[in-house]
Length: 68
Length: 285
Image (cartoon, rainbow over the protein chains, first blue to last red):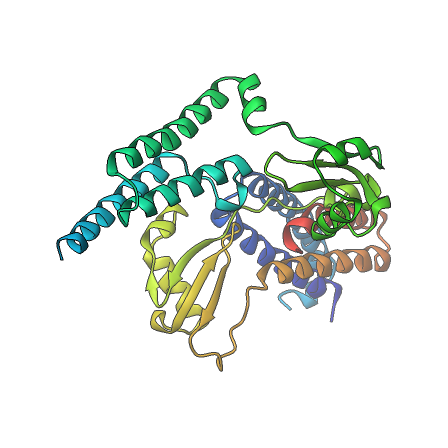
């Protein structure tokens, strides 16, 4: 498995957690819990952005593995 | 014949009268009343009993009942209005243990022996006298101990642990019937319940009890106990997914040779670690 595909996997799993967080933000009744989950969602978003930027560089460096 | 009819009518009448009088005298639990109001209740009971079987004159009985019903009500009213009257009528609570030492004079004044005190403390789970900092006898006779601070049950606050706030769960299914009111108070609708039940693969008729906790997870108990239901584990899985991503990022940081990428990976790995610490009380409990 190439580095690019490993990074891709991590991005996918982080995107999955983002979805679950969104569900809990809508269905929780407690304001404090909701704000903690919202913070976590924002943090996850920035991490995903960073990783996606890195993924672009990796795919540029090893174009033969693009799409794996 | 005429006398038995008289007794019947009197009894029915007194039954209703005494019931109304006792309701009027307040709603306190029998075990919490003071000795004196206990006497009041007994006098009312005896007078009513004697009246209903014709042992005393109806008029005399009524006069006695009137006094024994109206005085407690008047005294109760006075004790609500005035602190002095309250102490005069109900007595004052007696401190039996102070700073871990038994107050023998107070024990004597409430007519208790050391053994009585120990028995009462044991019933409050204080078996060891050395654990009790303070104990007080309330006006209704119960003894309430206050344990020394190092003998009290540990709370999350003592341990410095953050716990997620949790509101009371709402029961939304009972005996196979959907309860509309709690469901709407949660901001959910019957369609939500139908989709959740479909997800778990059970029908509403098979659900004996369904509760939604404050984070919106549904817990079910079925009539058919042979069916194993997947209990909500989404939060634990969410936590595990974050943990795995964090481990991945640490690995990437070690593998890459590009210094800029290394900094980015380790920075994000640290951020995820902070996030995990923050989420732990909310996701794992």
